[in-house]
Length: 112
Image (tube, rainbow, N blue to C red; front, top):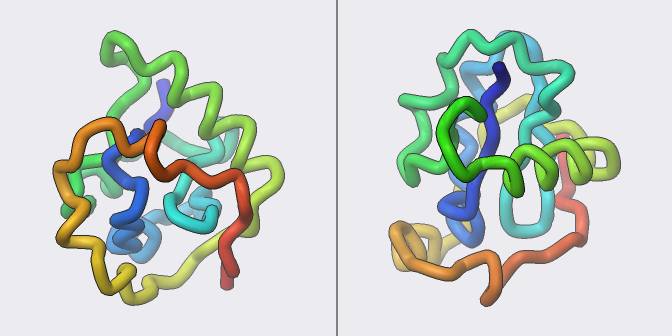
């Protein structure tokens, strides 16, 4: 098992999860974070820290797409190990539907 970041992170990109991760397995895209599944130790401390409820265990049904996306982009986006301020409009996008189709970007973030 591993944890994955899902669509709910897009355009919210809260980094509370990054601050508590003991193995620094988060990677930053332009408008979301992902988890490297091979680095994640399945501790689960990140899941309750996410204000957008975007982190789920990959054992939940229907998360295959997100496991693949987390695997793909954690290999190319920069590592992030410190909490940053969320985007100014993060709260406006919290809970929004269809964010992947509307906003997903393959561009990397700044990382640390």
